[in-house]
Length: 123
Image 1: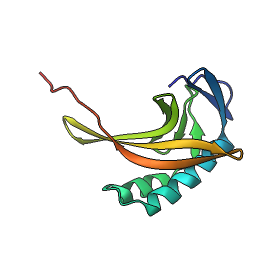
Image 2: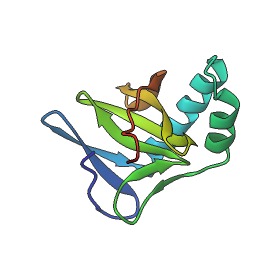
Image 3: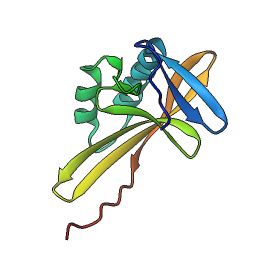
Image 4: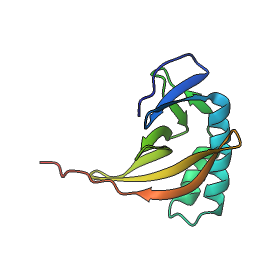
């Protein structure tokens, strides 16, 4: 992710050669769409993800990064995403990715998938 502090109402994310400026209003659109996608999903952690997402307002952090609860505005493969990770045990992390698209000036979550995360064993 290439978010940089701008002001309290916007952040940026680098997607390929483009720098996208994302506002709090954009994050609110993403949040609403994410909630709709989670409600329609059969993800294993659906209830927990909904609880943490519905109860959180979008914010731009002090470092300039966009957040919706535990979700972080990020990129994967030159695509904008919201990523969510949490520990399942001392040595295991579980993650989800919500892929984003902008259609008719509005940000939508088009798919939420489980992210494979490899954690190196502690020595």
